[in-house]
Structures are given as structure tokens and as C-alpha cells.
Length: 88
Image 1 (cartoon, one colour):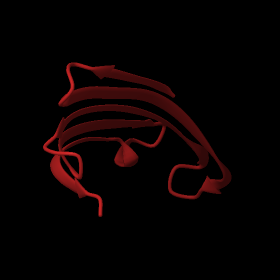
Image 2: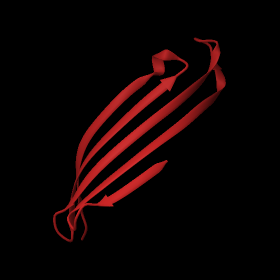
Image 3: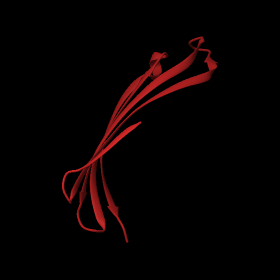
């Protein structure tokens, strides 16, 4: 896991992370006659705006790629979301 934070100015912060996970399954998959193994790559980018001292608004992009030795479990996923954090 690699995480990076950069404060653009007093109001904006840019954060990113990159990770690689390797999952090795113990059990044999009877459909493929092999043990499943996945490599999961993840990238996240987050832009946060401090609206005031109590509220933060964020725009978050997350990309995930799962590469498996069992093709039906391969996938790419893109998520774009917004969040509002309020402290009281």
C-alpha cells in the first residue's frame, strides 16, 4: 500500500493510494481443477474541500482491477462518488 497526501492550499487536499493484493485460495475449484489465485490492483484519488471548520466535501475516484487465473472472476471496476463529512 502506498498513500500520498498533498495539501493544495488551506481549503483543498489531494490524496491518493495504490495497492496490490495477492490472494491465494487453499481449496481446489472443481470447475477449473486448479486453486484460484487473484492479483488485485487498486488506485484511489480523493479531492477534499474544507467548506468550513465543521464540513468537508470530497470527490473520490476508485479503480479496481482483479486479474485471476480463473477468467470468470476477472473484472475492472470504476467508482466515482461524493461525500460530505460533518463534525459536531
